[in-house]
Length: 413
Image (cartoon, one colour):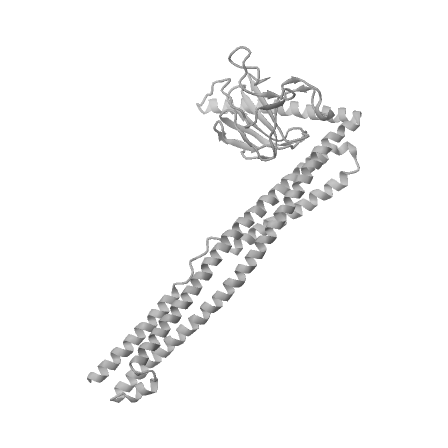
């Protein structure tokens, strides 16, 4: 009876050790924070952008021979530039996702290799423990039974151990397969990341070409005086209509605020520079027509020495009343600061705010660019007080002192 109890203890110990192996194998790789599905979603978005790009290119080609459609072509080029910029952002995000996925796959591979080594060591430890007891043979264990009941008991335990052993072996095989899969996926992800990097460089080159083409198109309008005058009249009429609409929207907003008991008083002044540059290329008022088609009675302040990625800041806190695209202003935003007081920011590469959004002074509302009636990247900035455009460089609370100071005029430096 003592020998039977000892044998059962031994088998229970073996079974416990085998179950420990199985439990340790269950602790596999944690869930990924980034999955291939995330990248596939970005690729689908990229395919949609490519389709849109082809449609825009077809429209451009259909207008290429007609000089009278120059501004329509410029609008399409601006849309094409926006499409390419979106593709660049998409590919950049893909690259970031690939980098994260590759890092996770490397960690997964290391963990799987460690799990495999640990499982194998534990399995070897169990076999060595059986060898020390001289009871490796399951037949010898059965033949040592001192009764039929003991034989059945030993047989049940052996069956349990053998089944558990097989599960451990199967898990070791699964870990090896997991390691091979992780290696393959890792190499695939690295290759796809390199392909995405190459695509990114191609898209950036394409964007530069499109921007040059768009800016050159505006300059080419000066070649035909009659077409130039017609385009100029159309653009100025659009700007006047936009200004009237901004004034109407501002009055509507003030009325709504008053109806809600939130009456806002006009508070002129208090502006900050809308970009980091202080280089003025055109001021409010008379000027030579830039490119042959720009207004000779400029309605705003043009700030140069910016690129296509410079942030545009809200010059003053207020509520966005317009955020859209037009042929003249390109991508532009208008902000209400109280009765009769608005600011306008034009020719943006992209807009970062929407209508109804409240912005604090200094918040980024867009990115500089050359959309609309523009021959190069700059910010067209307008200020109205009491419903009238004012020059922020000369109009201010102090005599002969404008709201915006410390600037350099084009031609003086």
